[in-house]
Amino acid sequence: MPPNLSGYQELTAVDAIRANDVWAAGFYGTSSGEQRMAFEHFDGTQWSMVKAPKNSLFTPYIFGLAHFASNDVWAVGVASDDPITMHWNGRVWKIVPNPAGSSGGILEAIVRVGNFMYAAGFVDPIQPLTLRFDGTQWVNDNAYKPASGPSILQAVAGTSPDDIWAGGYYNGGSPLTEKRDPKTNAWSQVPTSVGGYIDSMSARSSHEVWAVGPPDSSSGFVIRWNGKKWQSVNYPRTGVAIEQVNATASTGDTWVAAFSDVGSAQFTAFVDFYVNGQWTETPFVEVGNWSTVAWAISPVPGSSDLWAVGSYSNGNQFHQQSLAELWSCTSAVHQATSVNLGTTRNGISRNSWRLRL
Image 1 (spheres, rainbow, N blue to C red):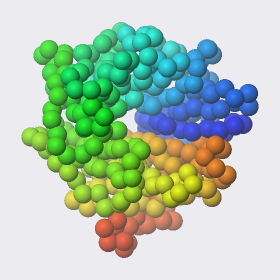
Image 2 (cartoon, rainbow, N blue to C red):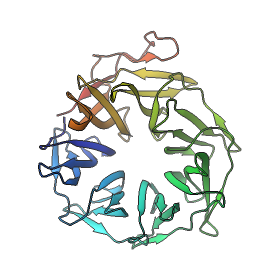
Image 3 (cartoon, rainbow, N blue to C red):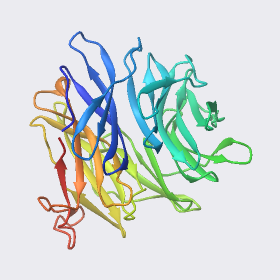
Image 4 (cartoon, one colour):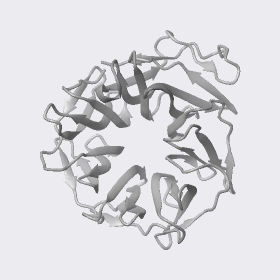
């Protein structure tokens, strides 16, 4: 598992560049009670801590990672109650200014589309924020702002400059999906009557965009854009919060990371995939004897492997430690099972989850 420091630690974002080049990020608490950002890197053999910038940022969280190359990786999140953008240049992580400045708010998600990076979140007073990195600097990207009530973006996805989406909620919980117009560089709302507030999005093509949520409800949802409208996708688990969706796997699978609250702040993690109209469970290694949570997932390009990161606890929710697991085709300790049928699915015995130290 990734190295853990004294106090508590949690990984909330992951980005696999290739099998021997994987980034994870989150936060940890120091013995003095401070909270600091954490960056960790997997070199194909082991995880190691990577130094974060020294600064006076208060209570930092990293929520998204995306890359152009091994020496060109971006992270977004919040620090000192302001949206933050950070860059890895192959040697060090540095804070990079963005137009949101000290306006208050959070950047919740980031995606690479072609030669650009797009990030989404919100600024105070509560209204959507989209940013675009044009190769030189971050610029405000003119998010659509619903007239009815406060609104927040928590997700961004896309496969081409002509097809970029953002998602979140407005007016107390109504689902908000926005699409970018490359001609005007502005966003507009695409109404949906299905789903709840959106926590994560991922796109495979212009006619296959996925959205999931919510993170703090008794039941999660999955919806999919078919090129014309949003439609519900049946997800067989009940009483779970779906944290992240990823539809970029080269295998054609769509993955989701979720968890359920079994009471007294104890959580059980799930990572499932959808292919050919069927959900399939991958038995996640429940590390903690108190709680295990999967917050983020990332396929390894050009393979059937998948990374999941999060946290586990052997005591209670205030003593969580960072966790990374790899879904691999190199062993068969655990078999994937059909969520719908509860039986072993033929042809999946090649895969298993493994802790990676």
